Image 1: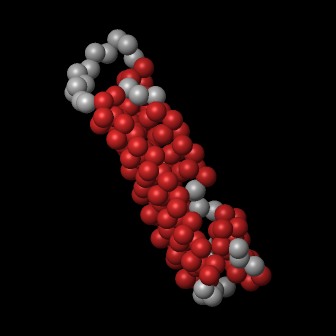
Image 2: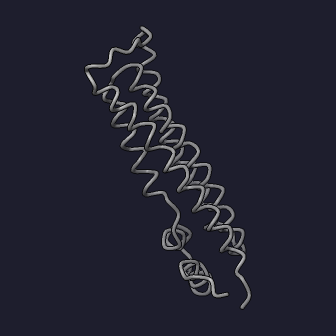
Image 3: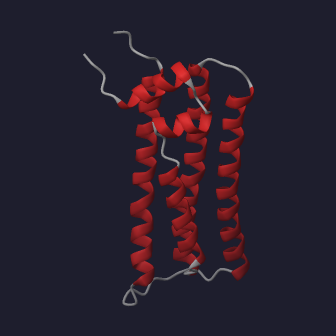
Amino acid sequence: MEKDPIRPIYHSLEKSSLIIIACAIPVFAIVYLISQNNTLDLDRPDLPIIIDYVLLGCIYAVLAVSYLNFQNAIKATLKAPMELINKVSIYKTATLNRLKLLLLCSILSPLGLYLFENNGYIIAYAITLALLSLGKPSPDRMVRLMRLKGEERERVIRIKTREES
C-alpha cells in the first residue's frame, strides 16, 4: 500500500500542537498559584498602570490577529483550485502560525498576572487555552474548514486510521 504524503504533514502538525498546549499550561498554573498564595511575599516591580492596560490590550489584539490570519489563510484554499497536498501545507502553515501566536499569549498572560495581579489576564489565558484546544488539528476539522469533498475528504479522513505495515 502506498503511503499518503499528507499523513506525515498531519502527524508533525499534531505533535507540534500538543507540545505547545503542554508548554502553555504549567507556566500559568504556577503563576496563578503564586498569585493566589497570600503567604508568599514576592517583590514585584512597581510599574505604571498604563503598562498593565497596554499589555492586556496587546494580548487581546494578538488573539484577534491569530484568528483573522488563520481564517484568511484557510480562505485561500477555498478560492483557488489546488492539489490536496498544497491545501494541507497551507493548513499546516496557518495552524502553526496561529499556535505560535497563542503560545505568545500563553506566556504574556502569566507574566501580566504575576506583575499586575489583574484578573483580566486570567480571562485572557482562559480564552487562549480555549482557542488552543479548539484549534488543535484533526482530520474532521481539516475537512470542515477546507470544505473537502469526495476523494480529498476520504484521504484526509483516512489519516485517523492506523498505518498498516
